[in-house]
Image 1 (tube, rainbow, N blue to C red):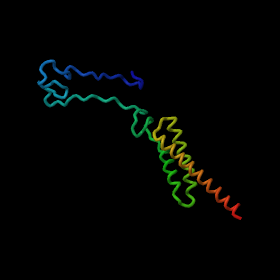
Image 2 (image 1 turned 30 degrees about the vertical axis):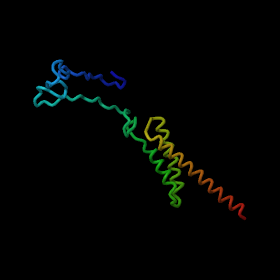
Image 3 (image 1 turned 90 degrees about the horizontal axis):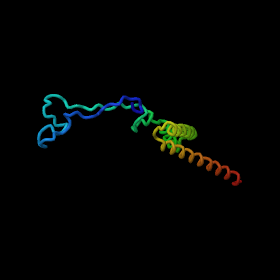
Image 4 (image 1 turned 90 degrees about the vertical axis):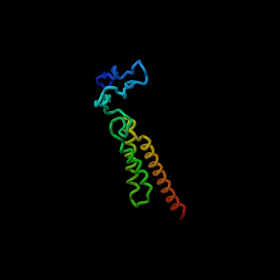
Length: 145
């Protein structure tokens, strides 16, 4: 048994697959040059089954992606579009989704850790920008008398 509790399988080639020790120009020297198989299909090796939680494909380690990291990044970009009364909503969603996506990528090894970090940074830059803008207008109204 291997570490995934799967049965060990033998992938050893049979004698038919080994090259002959005779002349090199005779048919049957290689496994794909079956000399007397006729209409029989060539042997196909069986691939081991994929186990959940393995692989580096689009699903990541746990078989699922990290949609909250992507959503947080997208919300942090949409936050900068000047649509009235929606920037605070998108800022809050970006901050929430990106932080959850980042914690998932750290804890479970989910993909898109970079997008989660970028979403957090962009949304926090937006907050700093809004705070500076508010301070500017407050300062202009106080000292502009």
